[in-house]
Length: 255
Image 1 (spheres, rainbow, N blue to C red):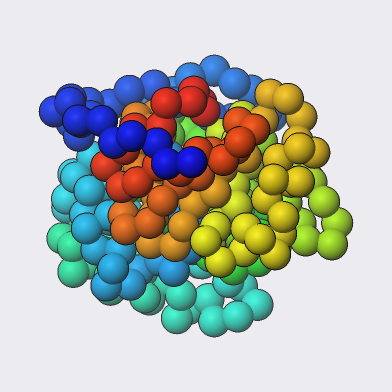
Image 2 (cartoon, rainbow, N blue to C red):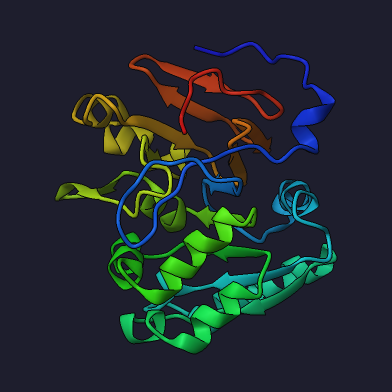
């Protein structure tokens, strides 16, 4: 089912609202930061307008860290460099945050980098590695603190998955996520994997207080505004799937 596309109030693009978050321990109080759940294929040409809109919320020349943690077993340096070059072209002041293992995630130096940033962008890759690396770490605590200060926390594919209250592991099932958005579980690359993963059945096995969210590639759901950005759709399973086009406001309360 397609949701209608409402006219967007000017305030959607300029206000900073309240959002959810967690520290080292799970909690559900709101915070003034911005959380972008991105469906994958980050830092490509068709992501420019989406990422430009995200940067506009924290200042186009903001210092943004690119964390290739989920790509640790692939090409993490290349993943970080792709992000740095992409964001630099958009006017940001990006820098790689090369947190690749739990030792890195407990580094005071890396946590201090987060403390000085206006945003952190987690790339795609292995969501289980990302989850296990960040959980309970100093870097993750610094990320949550940044969100509490009004910063931008973006996660693409594996990053978006790990941010949820629940995270799907193919062949295993649901795990507890990092809980940055505790009432959400994310299916990235939704148009590609939703049938293979059987998204309706996934939704049916979630706790009643957690909503399954499908996000297409080169597409983001920006919280707390519930605004769809990019070139694909965001699908909310409540329990029937409702698809929202770019520029739409998701009507279901997800934070």
